[in-house]
Image: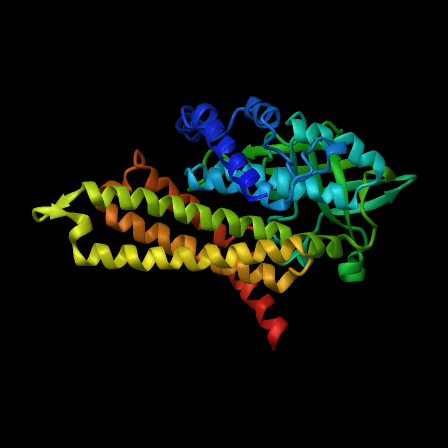
Length: 375
């Protein structure tokens, strides 16, 4: 298994070198990744890799899916890591775990090939980490539902073909009055807003989505009506673990760039790597990354064993993303003025890292979840 994992990792790296690296700077400038990249990822077997073979995946363990996101993050392709993780490790598993046989057969094989792109729509202008404040409403309409509302900050929003959408079905029932729906982008009444301008992860399309009397059949319900919030809670551990995996790998990539740089850069007549402050900073960051890599691998093993809960996921997401930002900041500092220049990859590592402490649940929410589990 370990040999197979490393062979797969090598394949991912070769794909990134040939198909992503030569074009990524242009995608960042364009602030969107071309749609045909999804097809290339699918053809290379890099989407939904742990999905069962009957639905187009490889049936590989979750750790193989982690490899794809880790290598994207390590290479400094944070936007693409975000896009792929939302598609393969969030949207697709929702359908795989909650979908009917018909829903799985319709969407998953196309998602594995990159023909259908997935997104998840939870956040609203007035409801971020606290989804109790969500206002998007699904009302019974004959033998189906009519959906009205707005979502924002939706990763893959410009390209998404199917959107796992969180709605209120009975606002008076609290968390029990919620449901998830599979919304096809071709449905009448669905509209995308502009591609939002962000300080980082520029190549990741992030959008507002609008639902104006979107009429969906009952077969569009994902899971059980009345349990939308519960379904989210069930799926959050994987979502937060994949964010932790990208955080650790991104920190490893940033540190590797910095070690190379301080060996080559000279100041006061000797390499930066010979300066005590540089050596101590590298030692600090190397230790920080190594500790979190060990913790991440333990989390992966517990996830595969079914022993990874919501509090575990909150700890993993909180600690690794905070570490990623510490390391990205420390690395940029060692680059000096050059680190502030966009032509240097360390600058992209720095701006891409910041959102990791926000999406998937803010660090503050993670700490509250952790505290509730022990107090």
